[in-house]
Amino acid sequence: MPGVELDTSVDLKEGACHHVVGISTPEETKFSHGQKFVDGKLNCGKMNVQEIIDLLVSHNNIAIYAHPHWSKIDISDIVDLKGLTGMEIMNYGCEVAWKSGNAEVFFDQFWWNENRIWCLGTDDAHQASYGYCGGYIVVKTDNLTHNDIINAISEGSFYSGFAQKGETAPDVIDFIVEDGIAKISCSPCRNIYLYTPNGQQSFHAVKQKPLTYAEYKLSDNAPYVKATCVDFSGNTSWCQPIVV
Image (cartoon, rainbow, N blue to C red):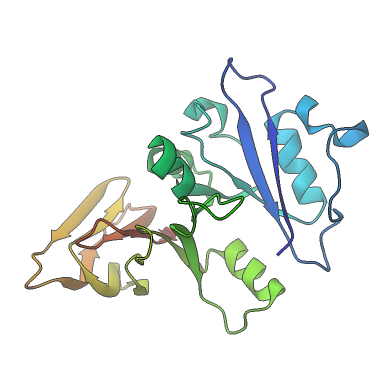
């Protein structure tokens, strides 16, 4: 899948930076392979982060905000950004190298401020290394074409995983809201968390009796519900929030 990662430090304190990933299909992207972004109107080092997001979207890419913890970003720097499809909730490369890959608190802030984006697990492997294949997404789609994958990501039809190298995150079989009850089915887990901005329920198991299902009755004023599954090795899967 054609992609690009652009960065800027415009309007930020010293040492901080914005990184934004754009991905598209070979047929729809307006960028060309090997295109340079350092001259003329594509001098991204002189753009602020919103201008970079707008550039990616205008060239038929979806925009994903990368590793805010590693980038030393304040939540106030990004929570009102427009045009993002998603954010890296876990960047495996940043986590194993710097212990700065987890961005759950940043993702929560977006939703608390009604800026509804999706969360993605990634590995940030620009080459094969120890930071390779530990973060990923599992897409629900009938066909594995470029267009179908991009459409599924855009619609939030996927979950995100983080796992130790050589392992996999919990499989999420289903996550729905039915008759005011959030329900999740998954592969065997130690912990399942179902939570809203105004309530939550967590479930905890032992190895002899792992969890594969949980449900939570939502309050009448719950705007959305999230779900997270953690297995006995700490490998984690995050579902996309469901608006209710």
